[in-house]
Image (cartoon, rainbow, N blue to C red; front, side):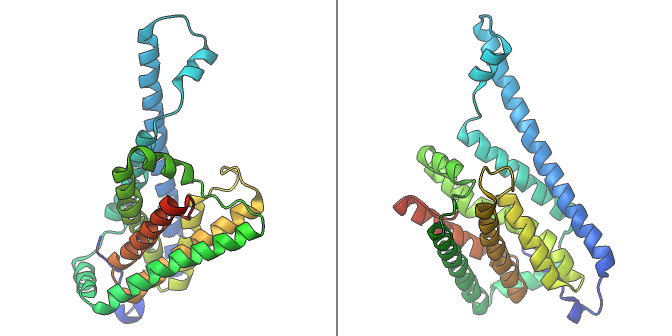
Length: 273
């Protein structure tokens, strides 16, 4: 995971864009399919378990009554399911499609020992936090609904499981998101000699995963604004990855951004997380 693809300018050749784009698209499709499948299986398993519990209580329940009493999965279950589904997809794609070579791992560890790397990590983490905060403030001044779709889950989780939620939001989510979006997706096009295209496409996918148009219950203008915020964050993380040559750099920047966002959320009751 502490890896960076060799820059093709220095590596003496790379895969063509014609080959890289279908591979990139396949990575996206596989990530979505794996994550969605695990999520649906988890929800189905929980519903079946709840159904068995209700059946054991006895009584005659029709379908509507059964659905009403099933309720919704508890917040801790949803957070763990998100971790397993998305994190699992990231790990599968990394080991199956974009596993690092020994040379990449060695170069990555060398980069972590440079003071410049951690200076860029700090700069990128603070920049993404300030950028998202300023853009959110601007959007709200324009009358847009810019409440992130994951905010309700984060608030509910923090209220009941503050330590686990903090660990999930600040550490675990950045780890698997950077592995998927920067190492697997951005890294594929970077290795093929198209880092700017990789930055653009991986940032768009990163944004769409956080805010799904038509499914987040927000107006088009609000959704587009949120997508722009997340895409900008993804672009900064990709840029710091390429600038440092180690995946630990965007992971560190992402952790810092989320830690600042979570701290502001607890102090002021609203932030981009």
